Image (tube, rainbow, N blue to C red; front, top):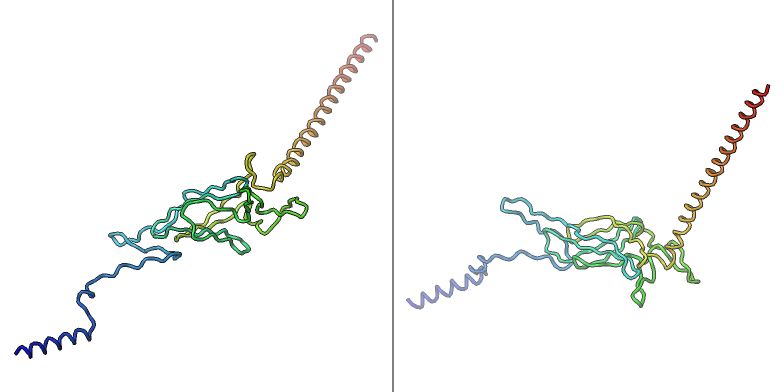
Length: 231
């Protein structure tokens, strides 16, 4: 009898092994796959009522700055509905190609496209300007499109596109080649002063002329009255 039982047990084990369906493995639940590094997309989760959870992106900081004569963009983004912890910033060139800065932290500071930092940490080149062989600067280069404003896309993902203005120069920080901002503003102020002077002089001369005419009229009336009384 024991031989028969053993034979039956052996046959059962062989059959289960052949099927390859362990009872414990069938009951186990596999975890949801997580996005790999660099993969963008929303999780698509829903709340207890089956409604989709928010999947959006908020830009909480977006500040063009000048740092040591270097134009930069300070940013901070807050994603909802995605586990991604990096952002890709794309500076959108209307005529292409775009400038892409990938795998950045969700907050930080980036160089403006076309800006170059010199060995001393200060600005050495600026978008929209090029330096000639004699050391002088002229307007116009391959980064003209990033100023006076440019569209910037933030992708975490979801993504968001907004427009930022090129940071202006200040007395303590220049976002143009040295001296160029001053030279560009001088003719404007000179024209204003010149226009003010040219408009004031005619008014003064006109006022003086009116006084002369008025005085002459008074004298003429007086002479006529005296002649009339004498007659």
